[in-house]
Structure formats: C-alpha cells, structure tokens
Amino acid sequence: MPYLTDLATQVGHALQQRGWRLATCESITGGGISQAITDVAGSSDWFDCGFVTYSNTSKTRFLEVAEALIAQHGAVSEEVAAAMVLGALAHTDAQISLSTTGIAGPGGAVPGKPVGTVCFGWAHGDIVHTERVVFSGDRAAVRAQTAEHALQGLLAFMERL
Image 1: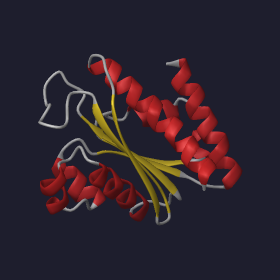
Image 2: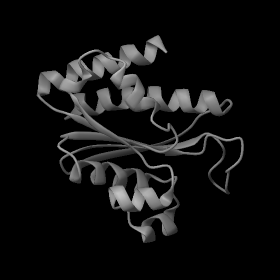
Image 3: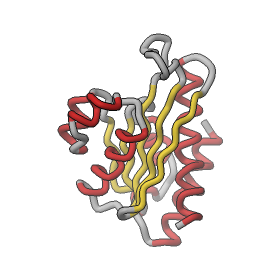
Image 4: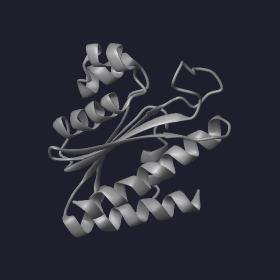
C-alpha cells in the first residue's frame, strides 16, 4: 500500500526530528503497521520493535496488560489499548508507542462492539491518548483503515506534544 508507506515515511521523519524511537503493539492489524514501517528504508534508525499480541494471554505476558482489566473491559477497549502502549514503553527502548485492538470480522461482534470496532492507544512517557472508532467494510478493509488511522493518529499525537 503506497499510501501506508508514505504515512510511515512521514512518521519516520517526525520521529527522527525528535530523536525518538517507536514501538508498536498490534492485535487487529497482525503486524501490518510494523510491515509498513519496515518497508521504509532506514526505518531501523527510528523503529525499535513491534509486538503482535493477538491473544489476551500474549497481551498479559508481553505487555503486562492485567487480566482483570481485560475481564472488566474486554480486549477491545480503550483501557486495554492504553495498557498496551504503556507496556510497550516499559519493555522497549522506544520513547513513543502505538496500539491497535479491535474486531475485524466477519464474526466476533458483541453487544456495544460491532464488527469494525477498533481501539487505539498512543503514548509518550506518561502521556496517553486513546480513541475508539467503528470502521465499515470487510475484514481487509477494516484492517487497512486501522493501520492508516494508527499512523495518522501517531502523527497528530506527536504534533500535540
């Protein structure tokens, strides 16, 4: 996706200007954001690592998302998205992180969380911003929109810092 690579390139420039490194923690996107980032030549200068924590167990094991938090709010929640980005910062050398967790479909919807529901998190230090969006389309469309929104959101988050 050329547009996604262009967004990743913009992210890279913004990170380099600040001397920061990025960590991603992806669930719904399954590593797609990290792939877009590493499609950019020289991304090793500003990309630290990516976690693909698709299961609740991996969110708990690798990002220290509390099981009780997942039980209370569900894996697809702003609370879990926030815990994911903070876990990524705690376990990497990155200064900023982003997270995605959602329901790509065609199944998986629950009351109040239809297919296409995605929660995002962005964090720098102890500053955390989360967002919940509902995208339309099939599984591939939801995942593509999620990756795009995550990178656009990261750029906007950095501008506000």
